[in-house]
Length: 217
Image (cartoon, rainbow, N blue to C red; front, top):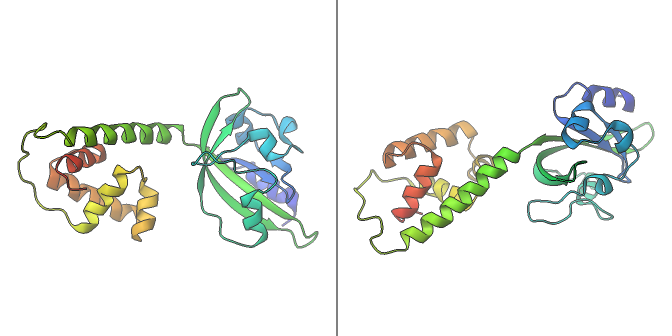
């Protein structure tokens, strides 16, 4: 596939798609990227992706730069998992996006191109932050003697179900938990349904809160 055909292909995706060469220079920028990041194609092309987006990972560490870990993984043919990235958009605000990476080796000219597919995950991050705050509050309350009274007994949870609640309580998301346990997202949803039935709760947040109060996690 010629490079221009690759660039044209990504014009058809609803994800923001931009392509970076092995020097970190942006060589393709689709319309969805213009909409998400605020930069026009002419403003983005030939810019270094770090200089333009100033990407930081979930731990606050810069992702791009002179020693870009993504480019290093691509050069070594190492797997690149999906990840969360906080970027600076044209307006100056910081935005969280979920990123998938594809690597395209052009056998004709020996160039390695890295394709980034990004979508807005602001709402998910907001929910995760709220969950963290709720979990912290619930743990503080459960530490107070008899604060909640003595809860009625509930059906026991399996070790897998308790581990799922424990991972949710420390901020892991569904994808991370399913991958860690080696199960599908549908199986995880089935576990959550069973957990809610046993704890007489209505959603994941209630289930985790109740589990903490009952000292199940």
